Image 1 (spheres, rainbow, N blue to C red):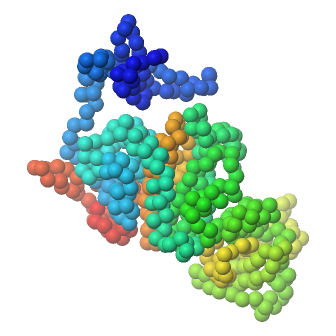
Image 2 (cartoon, rainbow, N blue to C red):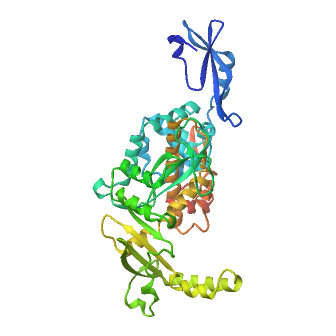
Image 3 (cartoon, rainbow, N blue to C red):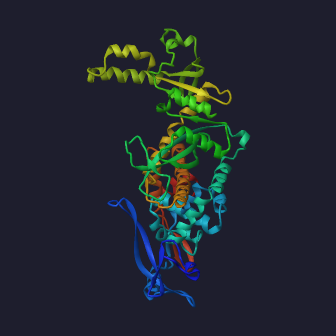
Length: 488
């Protein structure tokens, strides 16, 4: 419908303007996916007001009443523990995040990230949670609403170069010295939006062929946390995507650590042709592995060893098909696997036999790594780097279960990009908490989720214009001091 220029200036997202009997009226609209029609329908909601050439937009009386009802009134009791925990975990990045964009956008982004970290909530709940949390005394003191949140996410998504620059700055090392062991992996996120233009039918380990996007993460073995993310089409392969990720980071010296399912001759050729360095574990039945040294009775005389976590690891190096291979033997693991197999012969004789046991006995407790590297690394360095591979699996598990971010209903590509950035910040906080619990040897008693839930019970109350902390048990105080060195 044609609208005069003086009317067009009042058109905003999620609104429409109608010409009714010569007058112009502004309505709120929403978009909802219709599974029967397999498309997104536009639904017209309430009247917002009238537009005249003399007076501009004139809100309707009902609209003014609704706005007044939804205005956030001052809250004198606010959750404090979450804000205190989150800002402590992000202390190294907080100042740079505050200045990433304008104060309003940066603080809104931090608020969204914190609410995702603590409550795994959708966007519509964030204004209420922000108003009732102590972060509202520091970030966006005027409060946030749906429009501000969407605008902040969209602006973040439209400025990917700024985000990548921030991610590179966190590495704390120059491009020439950027050689580092990293885990690069991707996960699928289901989305039924028809407006993203990046989701596609794709396959994933859960055998789902629904429309999806791929989310690629880089996890630093040295920093023990995620350092990079990128959204890609749902039907693009990982090798192509890894090349693009490293191009965006502008480095060629990163060493990719894969999982066992990744190895194939084609994949290694593709990696080398794309100038990608790698460490890939081999399945024990892979023909590249040479087990002959371990089949000798005095094999220890001809191979080397090192100590890893108080365990002796034997190893030997060789080349096959122009690839460097190292085979490791953990004798403690070998004994455990031999015992387990022999026990299974007793309990499941149809599946496990002594003949097979003696055939594969020399493979128990072994790990073989094939590699293509930018420089020389010791066998111990490669082994220790690979042992951190599990960290990215833990991270993706947290992404889908802790953040509950395994699906999305975002309708705008750039808002989606900003949403992923807020989740990335939340994941940095999560993994720092996970690492602190691990270092304090408390993971057997507390999960990161437990600590977050405990922080929610700590409040600040305003009494005679001053904020006062709620009562906290000594056990909670001691726990938080032990984990992150702060008094809650």
